[in-house]
Length: 145
Image (cartoon, rainbow, N blue to C red):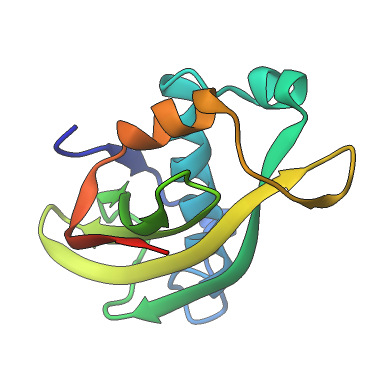
């Protein structure tokens, strides 16, 4: 897959007292985009429940470049930057653009899969690998050992 992009709408409630996007909304949009990708690629919340797994984040970082204001047209994408070959650990990056081409922020998350019964990190089943293999790869994507 070449790209996965979701458009998002700036709501009045998303703004801070400076009348630009609150910092926490960027992180919410990243989560929205990741879960939308999973849902659209056969890894729904229902299937994660059946598989008794869930994504867990170790690090979530946002670099803010341009402020987003009410009325801006905003889109967010995702790309896998690096991963273990079994996708038990991974790094995903989101680029948030406004008004078609201005990069407003870049979010980077490091994550893994949690066995929700044992409450320990685990190796995901084939369904997860199948979904991740469809995720767009970042330029410079690499496997980690």
